[in-house]
Image 1 (cartoon, rainbow, N blue to C red):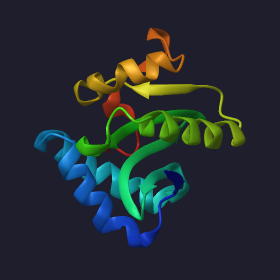
Image 2: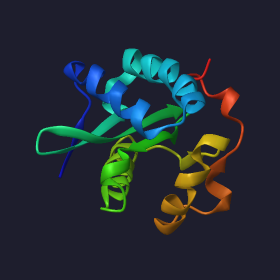
Image 3: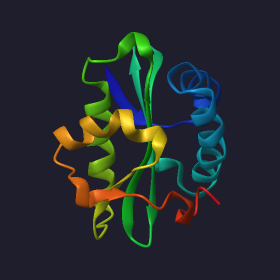
Length: 139
């Protein structure tokens, strides 16, 4: 498995991944922020590839110099293989390289299933950002 930056050629595969990995409502609530983040800073979107196929993606953003994990998606056929952990680690490194003041997890109802992953990686309750509507990428 290889984690890398999002590339323009990834638009279709990532869209398909999001449709497969997220609920319909979550997908609809993710596409517009993905588009905004792509136009602002595509380096804060990472993908995981396995044998040339995109099997995971993480959308991050920086808001008022705080890094935020907005949405993580791993294809259902590839879950429980460390892909989510690799995506979070890659994004965490990007946030640290940019010297953010702190890192938060967006804690909306769509991220609840991923919270155990973040908690296992050391992100506690005090790092869950509940007010999603205030994020610029959400609009």
